[in-house]
Image 1: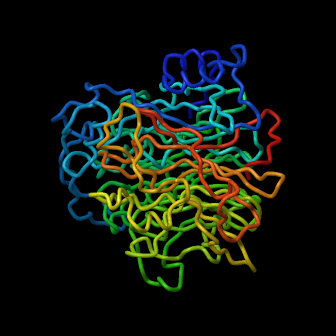
Image 2: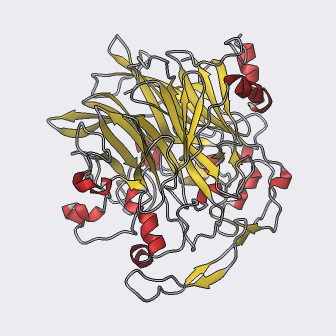
Image 3: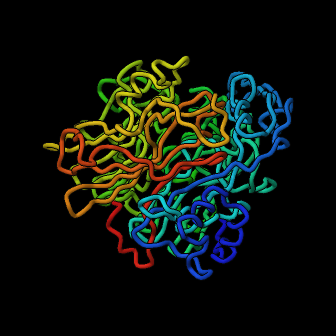
Length: 552
């Protein structure tokens, strides 16, 4: 456990050195100072907060020919089985860097010939902006306390707590002997200190830690051991607990070895939806509190079918609405890409109320009407990410697209037909207890149409492929404003490293069909990431009193 309260004055001083020049300059141009609060940071009520990261590496960050992941040693070994005997031989292989650390070509190291798990750590900034994208202030999060993986596109979602008083996000904190700072390699596939997968080529040890930030910029960090070997993605605070989603077990353990070896069992129980107590010492197996366990065999149409253990719970987004936890799955070839309800309607899962005394017994169900199509299908698969409930019968869902690059471009478009048709902001409404998809808003997203970034190689120009995280606000005139962070498709080495956008759309809440004209159902750009920047999460700002009703 690490518990830290950082003074806002120190953060602002650090921010003057670290914050991206393009955003600082824009703030000054708009008439806002880098510190508009007389040296005392405070988020402005009724404004937005966007999480951003900046690549700080240099050519020396990676040396061509060096072994990747760092510390990897090729070997073959066996593991004791829980019931006796040993596993089959398990092999660990390594790669080598093919290019140096220069941005953006550094991400060519992310590939089958080099390191499929390649990543570079980077600092986190929380930009407080108004609804038009003008920068009000920036809160730099000290990189020696918590960091992100720059190109890990599924990370750094922002969520406003249910009481409106704080924001939360997930990041990485080095375990004993491992540095917390910029330009550390492959942290996003490292083990956690408490859950070691011996088949993981990435031998680093980093906690997946929760950062909670209050209205005055004070930061509390709580380390956790969930999501060993993969990404912690999103966290929200509700009723005094952290509810998290992510994924793990990206090592080389097979289905059998995950089920009948202790490291495998530990991995399967530290993925998916998890609960963490703020400020606690990092829990270790068997006390990592996984919430429920979804398996495709729960559905009658897939009875008897088995995926790789834990991978059906490869969750990406989450929200709490009406005291109910919802999560999404939108990646990987196992499980079902859809929206899930975790626990009982109207009751947040807690250790005290868990069925049979175990959070693992909490039910995970697919609300009626949402997709039950297997992710392994060749057609009909969706890619849901963030969710925002406008009311109890309307939810907006970001679909990030399939990430498939069409090359050469077709009529100037580099996204495939499925992404052009289905990706973007989906509007679902509940009718007679069943959710139905009304329409997909993607006008203005320009899905598949490349756009340029100053100083960025034109050959790598990205295009929007859909959206990931989002938030929204209901207006008094019957409309809602929804803000989304875009996903991308490109020819870069890792599309998660593409400069992306924050965009806004206004929709008529009662509508069941798309509108044309009148300023409705057409996305506009609120903010665009610059060279060496990425945008990740968006939420409304916390307030000291917590009296915020815009994000539910």
